Length: 269
Image (tube, rainbow, N blue to C red; front, side, top):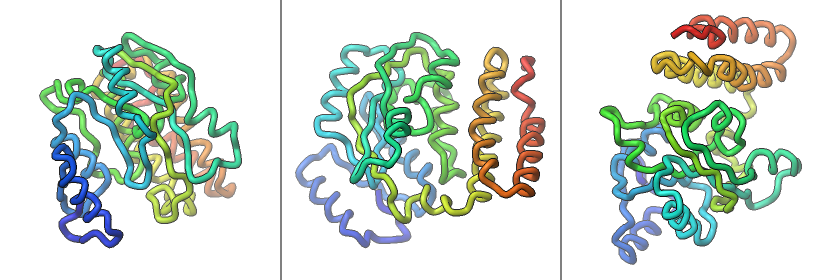
């Protein structure tokens, strides 16, 4: 995709045009300079295939990734979401344990949504680039499932938390289909990583949007305790990194946000 207000400075536009000449399936979509969510939505609106795969601009798919994924869709044609393993490049991270827990997981299959599929399976959160979605599942409603265009950070978390409770079959596969570039200077994650208060404020925005969606759809009933635990893990660990005075301020704010969004511990709709 190319933003209308800017031109490519890294030669990527010419690369895309060259590929378009070789393969008519490749399309160039021009959008106004906006959030990554807007770009994702433009791609979703233009997509014509049966399955949707997400690829960030600085990452890459593994060799034969789409071929392997296509074979999986033939095995499980009724799946709504297929989740696959990922690797990192250009270097392994220092903590191999984090790598194993975050990007690698065993095979599993679920028919119907459950707390386990979203809050226990390691492949569910927070990265959407290791998940393929059946296009009909995303578009079957009067209002198709799309990304919140106000978000340019953790937009995938809000999307996943809104999509998974609606899905009816999940397949977790061990094929490593995605290569994630780690520690890229200038990335969205890198741009806020040095400001812990800004990170927490953005986490609060995500928490508010997720809780609102769950409340509006009646999902808190039956899943409230699990959502509350997720909310705490999502925010509290970040708050602990602050100095004492700031920790108290943001801890108080966290509980105020929960009350404002209707406390997930409450099982009533």
